[in-house]
Each structure stands twice: as C-alpha cells, then as structure tokens.
Length: 244
Image (cartoon, rainbow, N blue to C red):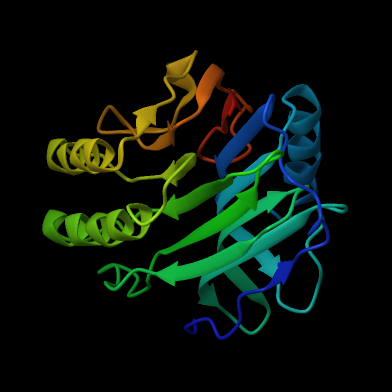
C-alpha cells in the first residue's frame, strides 16, 4: 500500500449552483464496495428513492486507471490508500459546481494498519448567493483518544474560517464515551446541530454507540433517516433533506 500520489476529480457542472429549497444529502461508508455491481445497483435505487443533491461516501474504492461509474455526476476524492490498481478514500459527488476542493490526510497513522485517514472539504455555490461548505470525514481509529481529539481540532480550525451554511458528515468512529465527548465539544465550537435520524437502529453501532452522523449549521432540516440496505455494506446509509 502506497501513500496516495493523486486525488482524482471530475467537475462537469461548474456553472450549476445548488438549489436552496430541497437539498438531499446521502452519506454512506461503503466498505470498499463501490466497484461491486450489486452495490452500484443498490446506490442507484437509493438515489431514486431519496433525491440526492450531494453524495458523501467513505471507504470508496476507485479503479486507478478507470472512471467513476456514476455517470453524469461531478465528484472529488481525498484518497488515503493507493495500490497499483486502486485508490481508496472519501468521495463527495454532486450535480453542482465545486468552487473549491481541499483533500486532507490525518496527521496520525492508525496503529493497526499504519495508514492515514482522509477527509475532504468542498465548497458549493447556492442559488442566489452564499456558499455551502461540506466536510466529508472518515475519522481516525485505532489510536489513543488524545490523537483523535487532535485530528478533530485540526478540522475545527478549518471550519471556523467559514461563515455560512455548513454540513459535516461521515463515519466518526466515536465508539467510546471519551470520543463522543470530543465530538460534542467539536459541534458546540462550530455551531453544528445533529440531524437526528428516524429508524436509528439501522445506523452502524460499535459498543452500542452509533458511528455515522450528519451535522449541519445555518440550514433547516426537513427529514432524516437511516436506511436499511440488507447489509450491502457493514454500514447502512444515512440521509437528510435540508433547505437553506
């Protein structure tokens, strides 16, 4: 496994702002199944049932010399692993303009696998003005809680530079009381609210603690739900609808 040398993107909607009145966010840790035909079929069905403006994937797997299979979408990737044939990381996709893309790696490596975790910050224009900042995160695991805290502090500093609507979503790996405490501190400092899911039992849990979240700021939440996908991945997707 190699430290990633490239961060692929495809930006084909650069004159298209996001609609303010109905903004759907689908977030999913895909367990590296994005090239699997069964997964792709499931994802296409989900996006028909749950209108999706922004798609946030963690543990996405892309063929190094191929194209992302979601035709007609813009996307950007922050990889944390590269092999001779594939890239793995977080991916944010939308049928909208990407004003700015910032791919970041954790400063710390995970002890078990000696790999970094990745996150991606994307900025999208909203119809009528303003800019939405989206943070798609797969938080670091298998390290001391203090190192998890340092990584969240790094993200907090980035987010505090932004004034306006904000979405922070992904797999936060908050399986302990201390990690949940650090996440709550992070949300207070950045003004984030949690999108509380219907059917929360479908959310991936570890030590009886949910791992996947969607947080938001300066937006109106209309609905949020965790979706049972019959274990296509070891995580189920979560979905929220907003207006700005």
